[in-house]
Image 1 (cartoon, rainbow, N blue to C red):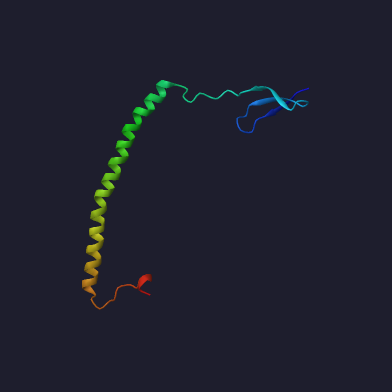
Image 2: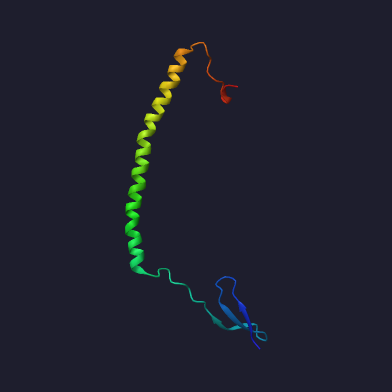
Length: 96
């Protein structure tokens, strides 16, 4: 009588003889295909280029406007500092 055991690493079915303690037979499970439809995968890859370009343009525009936002924040804080010269700047943790 042979024992059937599933391999924990590769999930193959092993048939083991209890007397000799040896693997008598094994059945390797079928692996699913990595790519089901080659044409669909090619179309998907062609669409990736357009998506990457769109993400790049979005990131580029965000970076371009980032400088303007920082400049406006600086101008507002500078104007506020000129209006109230006696007001001391807020204390930072590093100043303590």
